[in-house]
Image (cartoon, rainbow, N blue to C red):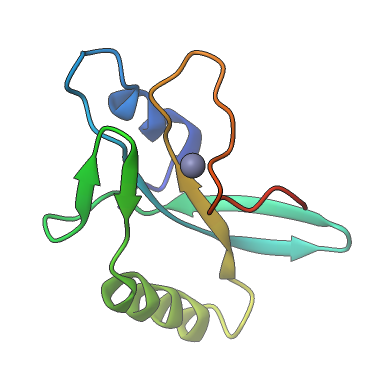
Length: 100
Ligand SMILES: [Zn+2]
């Protein structure tokens, strides 16, 4: 798990021809209309990772999100998902959310 969210994404850049998609969930604070990400989970051994597909198994991430939520008395919560794409200029796939 990465407590410095933006710094942790670099290791998952899909530069190699056979590099695989990666993803996880984002945890943080809701501040009015703004979201502050304070933690990004990373792919786990059990996740299905392919060049053009990342499938996250929900259970372990859900458990962590609930743990952080309880530890913080509800201040830290699930705020979204992240995953990589293998293109320099990614276009959302049909299963990617496209609206905020
Ligand atoms: Zn996608």
